[in-house]
Image 1 (tube, helix red, strand yellow):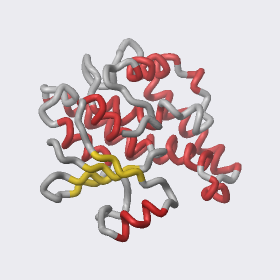
Image 2 (spheres, rainbow, N blue to C red):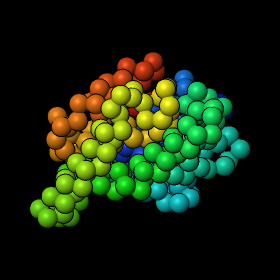
Image 3 (spheres, rainbow, N blue to C red):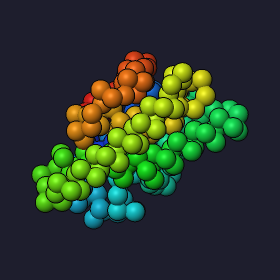
Length: 206
């Protein structure tokens, strides 16, 4: 895979996880940043670069476009060390990836978005923010408990599960206002992720 173009939102965890994997794989690609409410985003939609109307979208050399962040991760990591070889560990990895999109992202990422984007300020009412905070802490505690005695979420090495979960977890405190001091194992895991060769941060754009 050499001729890849990624349309992604610079501040979005879903977009970041794809950029992070590409960096960790050492894979070259063209990045088209489309921040929320930007002219670039509207242009990408108008020109048909986002078939599902959302980011990220990965354009392959043959014109195929892949959507949904975790599906893009699966495609890019095929045959690499980021996908465990044995079926059980692979299923555990996928379970955490489903957890990330179905339970983690709708709470942790949503609170961060309401807390970070001015155009969403009217939705960040106290009751909603309080509920997201409580539910988010409960989800982060599940992750904290799972990491007791483990370095990674599935198996003995980092996998796509770690990339998927890291995207919104590592900024849960700074952007979402979650009390990350409660979760020492999660914080240690975040440090391990940031120490991986090839790592790039959320705002380190190609």
